[in-house]
Image 1 (tube, one colour):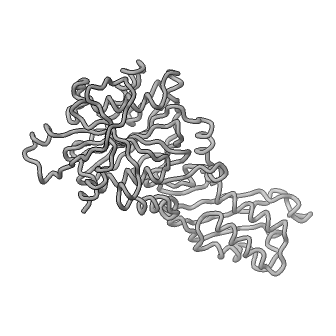
Image 2 (image 1 turned 180 degrees about the horizontal axis):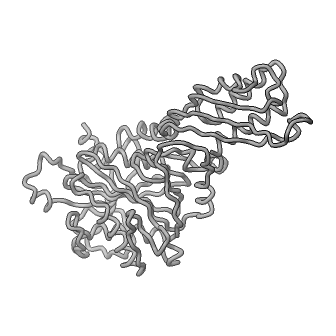
Length: 415
């Protein structure tokens, strides 16, 4: 069934003509052409498989992070890469993308993201957190598992940068692309059976100010076994060479991919390009890729983006304002909040308050009022529930309640 989906989708691919074309000329669309992707069961010997393997560069026409993640996952699940290796190139509107085993509250400033309309997404591979915008090029290399090679892919990118702009870059021990002490590309992978993919980002002209704000967070007081990112100084390619532009970069890497042997990673020259399937613009919709919208909905869901976070515990303390204390109390009183979160949902809350704030019924020591938070999403929704619970106390004190709500909001939105 999946193979039929693939064949039906590829009928709609618009193939770019490359026959007789010089690598530096503009890309031009030709008429639509059916590409027959045969299954491995139809192939002969291993030698025949290698000899018959071709490569394509797919270019997504979507800039929506959830759509592109769904497209990537759709290809990984449904496509047969036995004799057809794929490089998918894609760009996104502003988004923060975390790894499969990461905690979004720990990795990003969720309050800033919400304020600026920056999406937060979780991908299906491991690795650390990255910031995307239209100044960032994403690359996904698809192959069968047995032919997966992260090193070969990164070397291919480095060759393209050297060939086109004379830029000398290196592959770090962590398998990132770097220039000196600055990272210009992060990397991650998904290894399955029979397929695998390696994807990476390439910083071209990313807004580094927004990147810094989006990934700046307060992570003190958090206990978790979630994978945590290791911050690195970053640099745009346009800072290394002002002539590097996105359109030219996309074409240069595409050409480099098409001229490279799929197994030996040897540069086979321009003649080798004519034997490949070239560049193909693809429209990631249900019409082209049946079931894609369902996948997109899963990637965009709160349950996937936040609910997949490993269990964590956060404790924060706040100095109580002098005006909320009685004259005979010390001025260094603190309110302490401890929240246990499991699958993105508040599992338990401990709110320890000074005597002055414990005056109202139901608001003492471990503050029974906060039991209303249990079972709520660790989000602004929990704050709304707390405000409602405080308003129902017999002798509410508005200033005190506002302070407690403010502290809780600080824990939820800026941990």
